[in-house]
Image (cartoon, rainbow, N blue to C red; front, side, top):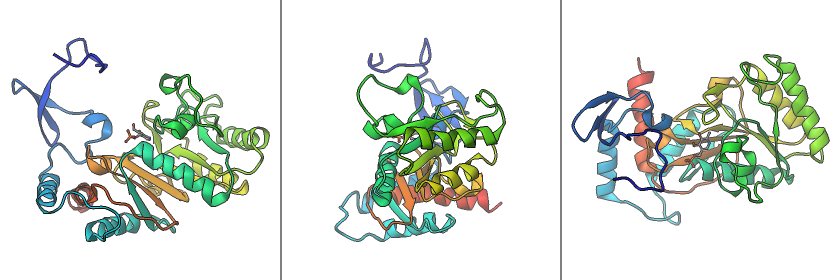
Length: 289
Ligand SMILES: Cc1ncc(COP(=O)(O)O)c(C=O)c1O
């Protein structure tokens, strides 16, 4: 039996009951090599011993308080994330999901600049809350309701299906014209994924973000980099630094943890102690090699 409200991609859905690192197991014990990783969420493997140990230890000590108290784990994790970031992205605000993180990033860009209009890219996914619905550029996820005011999409700079092929100049020109023709000329920001995930694992053309950020800044906007799909899909990977950087999904290996990194001080507490462990696992077991 399975709940009718959920859409499965299989005629006969597989039942998964166990996981260990790169493997999944069904209820009969059949082993599968997991190349999907919970839609790129299980960043360090299923039931990673280091993550499990951290979850158990923290759950025994303290599950939840509130932001009115101090907790060293939050500060230490924030510092670890900040230390990996370039520029002045030294403040981290933790939230529960990528959608929430993007909502916050949009709000921050608007409050900080005093401008309202935001630019996103076609074929992008940033969540399906009220504001992020405006930022996403895929009809398959849009709903026929008023939402996401003040956000418009520029041409997607991708070499395979992109309208201007691999010509970065054309895409940058489109962005500049869009700002001049469809906004007041002063914008709050520009949000783009490092690699478009839901849109089909689409990398943006090399050099586009750097040029796009210049145009955005000329019009008063803050670049927001949405690195939701990965523990540390950072600016280092795409060669540019944004004013705001978002992380989620893989950061908690399925636990609801996300963060917004910016120059603006913030805090927040949720399941941060557990999120610490995936980052540690990446550092110890991948980066050390
Ligand atoms: C790039 C990107 N942004 C935002 C989100 C939304 O994250 P969440 O499902 O945690 O709200 C996702 C998740 O699919 C994503 O891939």
